[in-house]
Amino acid sequence: QVQLVESGGGLVQAGGSLRLSCAASGGTFIKYGLAWVRQTPGKERELVTAISWNGENRYYADSVKGRFTISRDNARNTVYLQMNNLKPEDTAVYYCAAQLTVLLGTFAEEYDYWGQGTQVTVSS
Image (cartoon, rainbow, N blue to C red; front, side, top):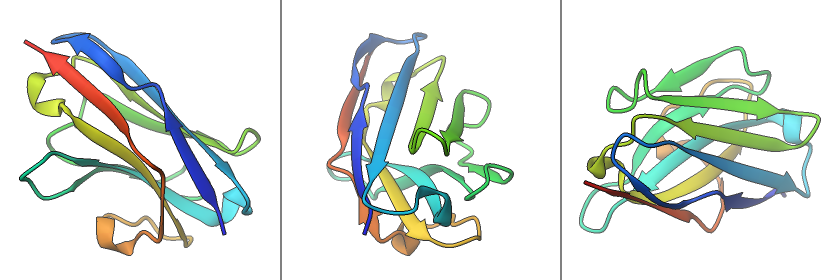
């Protein structure tokens, strides 16, 4: 069973950038599809991006397309989320999620393992 620990959240001004990291342990990292999911109080959680086990397939929600980039380093058991041109509406708790699959999972409900989350706050 894989454990996930996010880092890199914080407070940034609109237009700025942040890079989130998610370190995995306890599982065979390359077997997992990975995603970043965000949650804001009072709103449904949103899967913003996902990446397949080998990094060849990626999905981005329309709300972040062109601004966010997901990547993974299978040698370091880490997945990253580079967030550029941040907007106040990107403010949320960001969770790293994993599932045992070779497919590209684009629904948050598909994911079985979750980190504790990291807060991202974008000020206007």
